[in-house]
Length: 462
Image (cartoon, rainbow, N blue to C red; front, side):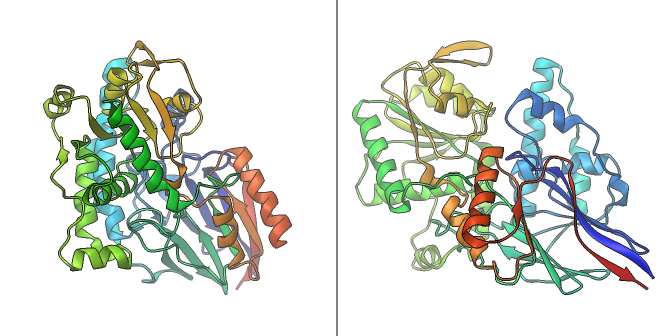
């Protein structure tokens, strides 16, 4: 008889919002090594350097990679993993695979431009992306995957299209990696699936220490910001993540215009990636909630209204400046750390008639966070830009659960929980949520450190 252990090593996403990368290992005579996510560290130059480092584990020993969703902080280093020798299968839902391919190619383009500008290393190639996609298998929610003695299923996380929690069933125990959890009810998606019999939970905590404003107020606040900006004859800039946030904002603007609640001004979706992602959203409308499915079934389409202009080319993007000042520009990236939005910010931030509306989480160190914190001037593309535009934030559009939502999620399965590992948040947010779980639910919880190894349980092998 030999003793085997089941353990987790926190290679990314510990004491950090980004860089999700967890290793679930079973030791013993028949070992298994599973990766959950392999994402980019984002937010500062330090993070860029971290992405280029060798992996802290033998990538050739990994049996399989499970991907929770298609945001870059969960998928961005997958081509590097393949380049470094990973040969196993990659599993996700179908929308995640399709969106991941677009995002990885787009990210490569951004890295290539940065490399030409500052000499930084491009750590994967287009061939690496193609190799990764060739290994990628898709499964539906609740469709079991069998690998040795493990059964793995995806459960609906309600975060973005196709997002999933990864549940590992082994020796009568359930270990769940949440990925990011949706801010349910969401405008487009089904609510986050409830868990009731989980033993070990590895969960996100982006908003672990604060709550969003009431959901019913977010459309009202969006309406008010649009009305006020247009009344000043200004331009509204919205740095939006290409996946989910862009589609939600488009859906809300379309509804407000159809109800004659806001002026019928031009709306520019200025992001080739977001345009491609929106097409995938249309393709997989079966993932939407009942209300949106009903709207589609009754013949009233979504993401299609007369004021919407999709600007794919660079020339089309530059031509936006020729339109009247009264307009709405939605462009990536959501954290203003690249993409076309920084060109618009450079042009429009100096004018007090204009507004910059932040609708997503802004990690410490990124340009979006610097603007959110009230900087009087910022550096964009090597130029000092005075900030005179109005800076607004709507947290209700976050695709993440807030502190109360996260606590309620844990409460549903509190009776079966043996341990909760609070990850994917800034240390302050993670530790606050740890304390809430301990005090309110009397469940053992902790926030692991980067690289820390935690043994879940041991068992005897014949």
